[in-house]
Structure formats: structure tokens, C-alpha cells
Image 1 (cartoon, rainbow, N blue to C red):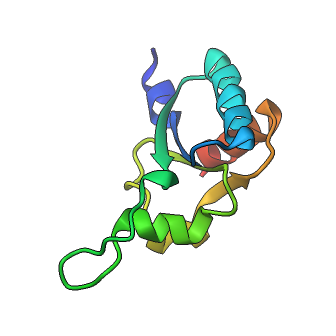
Image 2 (cartoon, rainbow, N blue to C red; image 1 turned 30 degrees about the vertical axis):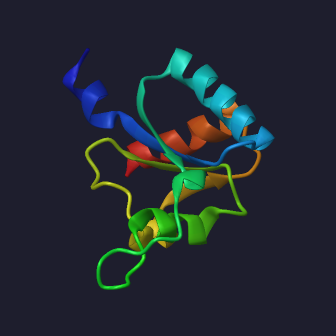
Amino acid sequence: MFASSILRQCRITLFTRATCGLCDSAKAVLTQVQEKRAFELQHVDLSAATGEKETGGEKTEMQMWRDLYDFDVPVIHVAKASAPPESPSRAAKAVKLMHRMTPADVEAKMDAVEKQ
């Protein structure tokens, strides 16, 4: 693999929850894209968030993600692989797709991120 290919590689974070048919479709779309293009895939299962708060009464990061996306899943964030980890505080600036997506939609977002 060439150095430029490694530098251009994307990271996709998929936000899902249990028993979500659209989430299953999004996973299938990402599998199709991954057969053509390499990218790092991370899963965040919002159904794993609990009502318990951290010491000090603050929400956990998982609870903040759930507050943002619980009724909008599936959601994908597309970033450069070298970018900092996803954070709820930076979610508004993320390159994202929500609900229904096609392989072409995902690849277009990947292309946009790679050009940044």
C-alpha cells in the first residue's frame, strides 16, 4: 500500500441500536463499500447507554451520544483515520449521513473527507 493511500484512509463511526432495521441496512451498505475501499469501522451501540451517571452527576459520553442520535439511527460519521476520536461536543461539525444511505452516498462523503 502506498503512503498516500494510508494518509487518505477514512474512519467511519456507525451509531446504531438494537432491533433497528435501518441500522441493519446501513451495516450492509458499509460492508459493500468496504469491499471496494479500505476504511476503519467503529460501532457505537446506543442501546448500551444506561441511566447511570458518572461520579459527580455528569452524563457519560455514551449517554450524550444517545441524547444526540437515539431517534435518528443509523448515523455515520466520516473522518480521516488520523482525526481525533469522535466526541459528542464536536458532533455538529462531523461529516455525517443519517437514516437511509447508499454505497454512493458513503463514498461521496469519504471522497469529501479525503480532500480536506
